[in-house]
Image (tube, rainbow, N blue to C red):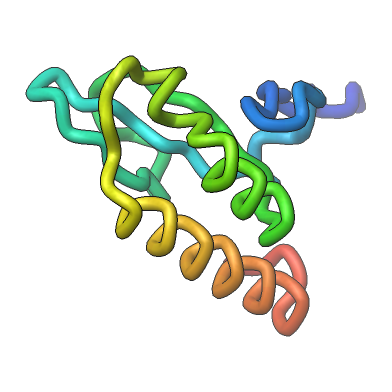
Length: 99
């Protein structure tokens, strides 16, 4: 049997190609809101970031998503992103790949 192709996406902060399951999607909706998209199904322009607190903190420091989505985001968005990534990384460590 032929092995399945693993979908890869580019981490917007590090520039590395990573399996899609190891990333979280951030979306700018058609209305202009920027939101976390854990389901990977929201409409809009998406960008991906690794499930790593260090990478999320780098994104906050460099204000990566302000540049990518050409908008001014609040500090709270980046704080929520870091908290979400930290939670998902801990969850992955505890439970493995099962969600």
